[in-house]
Image (cartoon, rainbow, N blue to C red; front, side, top):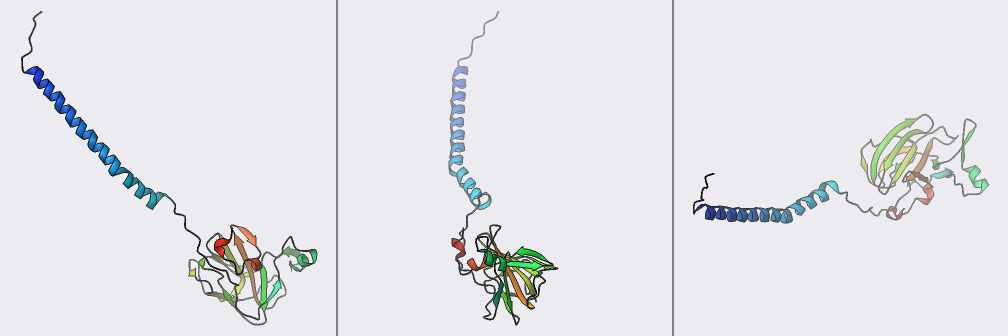
Length: 210
């Protein structure tokens, strides 16, 4: 076997190559770490805050009003409350074709036509016609509140409209629930999908409702 001797310049050259490689690797790793620290979190935070993370908006303070402002409007049928005494419950039943049903809202009526008002700021989400209740308007408000106006006519709004509290949305109209006057409003209100007594809803700050 023939033995070859390395030339004198080979080992220093290899050493210099290794040292240079180590220095390059150090600077490369250092740059990568600096990029991750300075740029990475800033980019991620901006993305999460603006696109992915939901923002909890506080419910605006607003006090609910009645759906009319006519002093001649009277209550024809009260809301049926299971906690009321038997006599009051009987007076809150609605009879239609010999069938008695608990009143799920307030039935208002008047000898003369009256204007129907939005009880809160909101968005018109539905308008439809019912054979018994007549024309129906549904408004979605903040804090999970939905108001429903039944037995109305001359509707001034359409689905998608934004309304302000007190805006006139329709006029009183007829229904087939009872032998009432021609000028009626059957009003219902819901909180988070649960129906509530409208008379307990008026003049309440909705931001405090749970």
